[in-house]
Length: 158
Image 1 (spheres, rainbow, N blue to C red):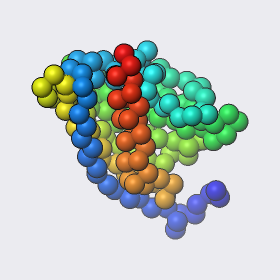
Image 2: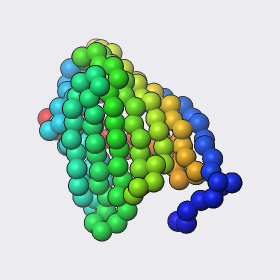
Image 3: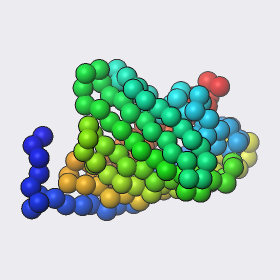
């Protein structure tokens, strides 16, 4: 893709909400986000992709970096900052997504966990600004649903 001129620069703002139920208590869902070993089993799991870097400092003010992509292909990178953490109940973070060195979006995400019988009701809300038509809300919703499907599989296999 060629470099964009100033007149081609634009932003698209969007917010989406995804709700899921998981057959495990909120503590286990929370741990799947907080524990790097557990998160590595479901986050960024795309067939054929190699993970080049994944580090988590899970605390308020802490950072997470995930970088990977197809072998010898385009690299994708998420740079995350954690803003609010209530164990087993809520995580609020912001992240910038890059493709190679180009920022394609900046988002604020809130994850809420509520007991639902013996399981968990998860509410995922993302407010994003998508930059220069490189990404959009529809793609992000699809990718987030894929990640939450991966999470479901990982929790069931635990």
